[in-house]
Image (cartoon, helix red, strand yellow):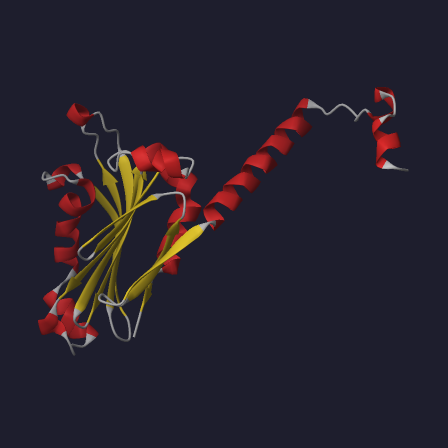
Length: 214
C-alpha cells in the first residue's frame, strides 16, 4: 500500500491496542535503560606520553587537566552543558593523578610495597578523597593490597561524611592506587551517596579503561 494511502486511513483502522499500566511502566523502564546505555557508551579517550597512561572518560563530562592530573566532572544526566556548570564537590567525579617517583625506578613489587604500604594508602584517603582532615569521620572498607608482576595495586571503598556548612551530603568513592617502578597512579570515582550506584556502569568503565603504556 502506498504511504499516502496508509496515512489517509481512518484513525480507527490504525489505532494501537491500549497498553496496561504495567506494560507502559515496562516500556518506560526499557527506554530509560536504553537511553542510559547510549549515554554511558559515549567516551572520550585521553593519553599522556609524559606519564605513560591512557584512559577513557564519559564524553558528556567537563574535563579538567592539570600537571599530572585529569578530572571528569559529570552532571547526573552526563549532559555537557550541565556538566560545564556542575560543582566537583556534589557531582560524579572521575580522577586520575600521576606522580613521578624517580628513586623507585627498577624496584620490585615487594620493594615498592615496603616504600608505600597499606597503612600509608589508608592514611592518605580521608584528605585526598573526601577533603576531610578528621580521619575518624571517614569510613574505609574493603582495603586491599595486591602484588602483581610489576606493580602494587591498592583498592578501597570510601564513605565521605556530610559537610553541613558546605551543604554537602554523604558521598561514596571507589579508589585504586597503582604503585609502579618510577610512577604512582591514583584513580578515584566519587559521587553523592544516592547517585553512586546509579553511575556504577560509568565508574566501572572508567577503571577498566585505564592502561599503563610502555
